[in-house]
Length: 282
Image: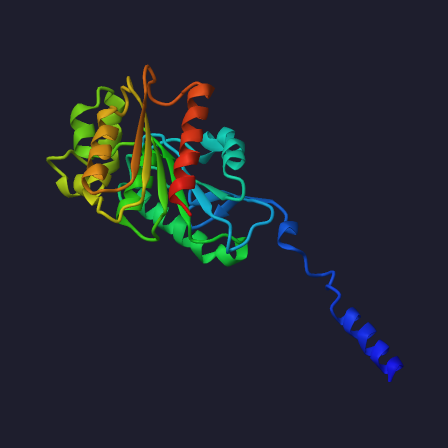
C-alpha cells in the first residue's frame, strides 16, 4: 500500500508540472507593426506599438492623430515622441495613424472623421489578437486634436480620455477669426465652402457642438500667442466642458506659438497629460 501511495504521489507531482509551451504573461514580447492597413485607401494605415507583457485585461490603448491643417502632415510627425509616450505610459499599446488628406479634388469632410472611426473600429476588432482592451485614449495635435475631440464627443467607439494639443474646436469661429490665412484656407478646403455656403458642415465638424455630460475627460494644451489656431478655441472648449460638468484641464503656455514647442515645454505637457490620464482612465 505504501508503494502504491508513493507512485500516486510521484504521478501527481509530474502531472502538475507546468507545460513549458505555456508562457507567463510577462513573456509576451513587445512588437512594432508598421503600415497596418485599416481601410482600402493607401492613406488608411497606422503603426502599432505593442508592449511586452500585454493582455486584454490590463493593456490600454493610446491612439495618436497628427496635424497638418487636414491637408498635410503624416504620422511620422509623431515618431520622435513615441518613445516618450511609451516611457510615460508603460503597459499601454500605442497606435499612430494616418488619415486621408483633404485636397482640391476630394477627401472633404467627413472623410477624416470617418477615418478615425474606421481606425478605432479596426483596432477594437483586433483587440484579442493584439492583446489590448477597449480603454482608449485619443491624443492629437492641431487638426489631429480637432479630429480627436470630434470623435470623442460625437462618435463610437467611445473613448476614456482626450489629450488635445492646440486643436480647433469651433470651425465657424476659426474661419472668422484665425489671423493666419492658411488656417482659413484649410478650413474652407476641408468643409467645401464658407460658413455661409455650407453651414451644416461647419456645425457637424465643430467639437463644441457635441459635448454632453457623458463626454470624455479632456486635457487641453495651447500656446498663448498661437496665431494659427487662436487660444480662444481652447478657452471655448474649456468653457463648454465646464458647463456640462465634464472633467477637464486647460494649460496655457505663455509665449508659445503653434507647434514647435521646446522640449522642456513639451515634456511638461506630456507629464501633465500622464497625471490626468492616470486619474481618469482606470
